[in-house]
Image 1 (spheres, rainbow, N blue to C red):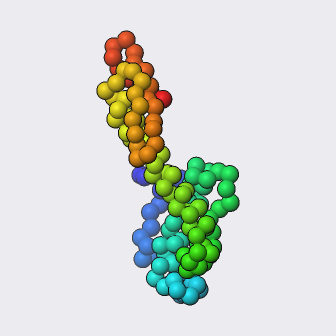
Image 2: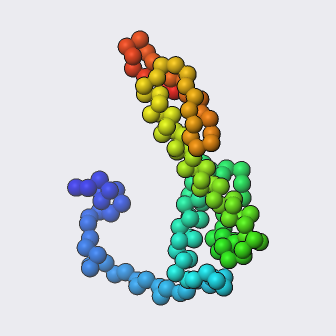
Amino acid sequence: MDIHVGILFPQRYEDQDLDLAPLPIPKLVQTPDGLPNELFGEVAMVTQFISCYKDLLMPDDDPIMTDALMKALVADKAGFSYLAKTLQVLLQTLLQDAIAEVTNRFCLCSQTKRNFRVGTFLVDCVCYFDGGGRKLGFL
């Protein structure tokens, strides 16, 4: 017996046997002029991702809202600052990931302090090894 089945449901059911209500009829979401309805899902995915990881990505900032992002996408220069904020959050995440990957790669073969570049950023790496030569960690 599956542990999830025993906890939540006393037995398994076939979906054909369940009496379920039909899904609601989908409605078009109003998008600003210049933004096709087909792109709403893309905008919603970006804002949902940022919203889910808000505490890690932007703990002190206001959340990025879907309607505001859609308006910024079609506002030309007026929406630049909102788009820049959104891109900064996403690019900062990618940069931190790249720095961690490069730091880990360089620290695997070094026992001393090293400086290396990721793009235009200079990163310091100090590795710590135990007596047997195994890496304990890096900063």
